[in-house]
Image 1 (cartoon, one colour):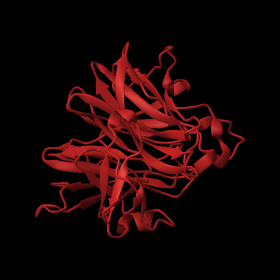
Image 2 (spheres, helix red, strand yellow):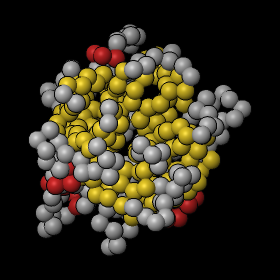
Image 3 (cartoon, rainbow, N blue to C red):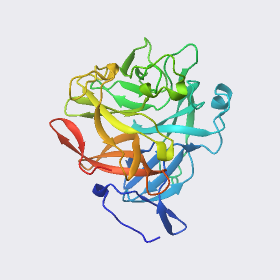
Length: 327
């Protein structure tokens, strides 16, 4: 395949280098960070999939975070064998914190764990992932929330919070301890987004409640809560779309452009699929060199609905995020 060096602003699929041959990069639930001059991408996969790049266009596959499933997770989650979901990466006090999800698909038998590393460079002598185990757990019959899709955000006072969740009673926010390894005491919990659901429908078809993949981005006095509505992971039948609301307080309430609270079903459209992309979602928002980017995956309508990495520049109009190039 011919190597293409397309600019990020074009919103094209990125490329993967495999033995000197390039290919479109297949990902689910991507999140990105930069260390020195290298960008690192963490995604859903066995042991957590990792890619590196010098230009955000051509990517190289690295070794996964875990070479075997964490023992604590195997014991806690029945059927979990190492396929790990929706990581989130951040830097604090010289350590990289990687939050991740382990779950039984379609159930809220789930946990969020965390691992740390002094560096993301696998060639460094200091490179070593240290797993700290469980941060939050959801239990069927006890909890009406789901401990997956974590994202760490720090408030204006420097306190760390974790936003997470999907389906059920929606997206939750909880304050963490200063060391970021457990829930703070006394506990502070909030519901920041949800969609009304028909209690008669089973979880597998409760489409009216399909909400997940929260990510909070702070800009000019507002916290922006990005979420994904509708269905991922169904190839050509995927209906994923990215929605947003904002709040002047990290605890909310988050409201959309029309003033509808997100915990009452509100949300303004950021991006959705069309003839080229069946659906787009599970986004992260990052800033590099003064430019904001939306990192997400889309289901490629030109290739049997396969999931691909998408990167788009964000522009801001009247305080709201706009993607200039639609999919």
